[in-house]
Image (cartoon, rainbow, N blue to C red; front, side, top):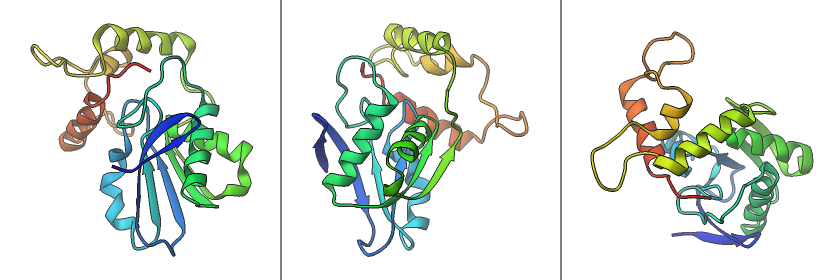
Length: 192
């Protein structure tokens, strides 16, 4: 498994594709990991060298105790691309990853060849919403319990207790994609 230590943190990453191609860095949303981008990978490898990583507290990366800031996560990305000797890159971030992308655009624009921000905002949610999420995860974890009967994802239940809906039509989300999203969330659950 490829790891690099940056900012006193062990980060997991996958760098794939031809080193002669432009670099595209993918940054995932909260509660998921680098595998979120798996469906896009094969279509992109003929055009880009793709770097996917697990943000601090996610997937195989370390989860140090305490709160994490967008600045820390942005500095993690800069440390990662520096350790891999990737001087410039396009960046695609989803939700939390998009917040990291915004930080990079403000603090390291010379590194960016392009920026894609998806489902993100300069401010995501309210302090109350985040405290509810934190409380839900601390009390029930991110997804399925290790022992006992399966339950609905604690995070989804705390944020949106109804059935998953598409963003455009109000109809239920595609079942295979919804199941994949639940699997990604259920991988989480580590404090950090």
